[in-house]
Length: 384
Image (cartoon, rainbow, N blue to C red; front, side, top):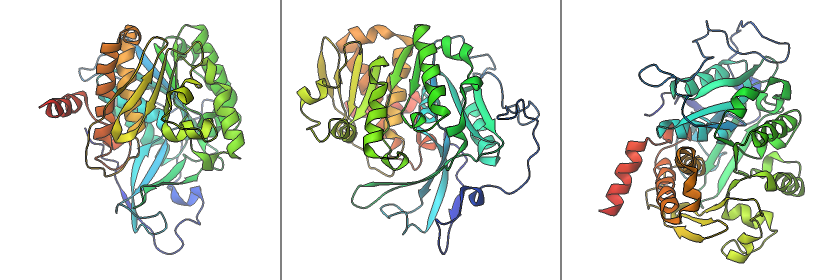
């Protein structure tokens, strides 16, 4: 189902000089905090805190769930395609953030998911928490910071096909999640723990990330890693490469793009299997390379191959990779034996490719994530 959080923002004059605080609501909010550094919402505020519920009101967390860790933010996408951020006349507000996108994507597909992260104790933070709840994502691990705003990102796809990003997070609440705020019970009971690299950029979130992944690994949880390279957020390219690779060998599943292969290998050919194999560490169960409309490649210890994608009319590529990840993790959470069965893995990847393809047909990330029914319909049409 499409979300309704699609307010259009029109800017005139010097549009990007304002601070993050000037772009958020100035209305005073009164909330009881559970600690001096972070607060969870009380039940009086839209009953945000609590287990995600299925459509019949029963808890969905009994089934194997994917726990997504990291940032959740507001994406602003231009209402007119093919323009730079500076030339865009207006922007549409859309919830996003790669780990949160994956969590919602899994729930949309009928799977079970949870999210751990931090947002501001502000109207955007409340909106994002409610979006998780409304999409049947367990948000018990979400925290609210009274001293920092929810992160904002302006995203566009230019007429040359280049993605442009402009972030407002100096610091934003997601950067301030502390290890003491982690819900370790939620982490240890997950089937898969999914994360990116943005949470490694600054402290204290970096330490929280490492502690969460360590707890998951020790509990036997499968670790899923999507580096999700966003160079403008890092101090330098070298720092980004070093930190992204610092946790590489702890992951069981890694998804990367062609661009990220070039970056991590310092310019080597992303289409050369020998180059890609350099990124395959001994304990890795599955390495996935996404190629946009061309589909994806897969690498395991025993087999490798390619699964073609679906050709669709592109409106906005934001969130396509996250939809792909949601598609494959939703399948693996139910049956990890797919990793040993190439034919069934290819079917799961075909499903994941369709998830990504359907997402680029709608603006924004979370608003565009497809349902399982929509994916099956698209696959049937592709076969016919």
